[in-house]
Length: 451
Image (cartoon, rainbow, N blue to C red; front, side, top):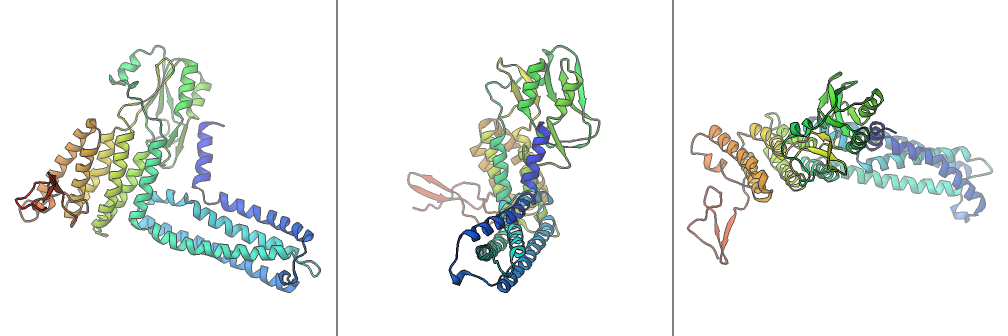
């Protein structure tokens, strides 16, 4: 199985909401057959036995109830899609479809439906599957409890702050899974010098169909490049949209047509970006939620402030776990055989802050929280990233000056506040005493001290 097909199968099973319910529907008749055979071997007490009319009526009601519950869950899902696309971000729906609890719920409903229907066919005047009828009642009870849990769960899960937490957690998992460049082995003299040592012809492998790059099998590319003694340079990164016929890979060295076809199969292309290998897409979703909250139609800066909490968390995780440098895959001899363009941390920072700063330029609350985010990043990130944060702080200063030209609100907008407005001010601690900051909130101790 090629890397592309394997990725698509995994994505289909992970994102699709039908695989697990289908499995539950298949297991229902199997369990009904097992319960019928067990009923033939075990004699239940008279109090646990059912008459044929009672069993038929009960199972008929259960079948109808399961059909109604499945319809209810589908209706709720449609409403969730409408709410999420209208108030959050359409790109969040991929994470919603992955929710394992929703799949388990539908699988339980479908299994109970087919289980009850299979038992209904086995009820005769002389034989009643008593164990199966009791088990069907237990399954319906479990289904109702799961439904109540589901309703309570999705009502809380669709709050913007809960969505932001889920997206940020997914982004952190992506960062942890990706192979990270080794700073000791990463070349700092640029890709052009790496490629000047490569001899042989250069071949451009073009994209057979348009699509966004969803995943790349870097290890398979390295194995192929090592086997055929060539260097593979990707012309696009994960998340880029590649038109039909555009260059996808540049190969330095002789490659046959069969090798070119194998190279194409190591790229998974789809209609849109996914989170599997693209942590920037998690930031993109978070920024979309924040700027939608800042639109004039919504005007909810507090949501943007809450989203900034999780943007800061994801940026810190990226800074600590993802060193700068091209995505290089090297063989045992240290030769760079595969070169993948990757984003630098400053590009993640620009993605995370630029649009929020633009759309929230008139919101004191957003500007204060954004400054607190940048100051926290400057204090916690590795030294090589701090210059990028200083540039963003300079842009923020200019935004505040432009939108608050008078001294009425400028000191308030220019302050740093992790809660936007109303957060506790930082205190300077020296020799066991602490002092509140002055009115600008920037950490300067005032003349009044507190013990």
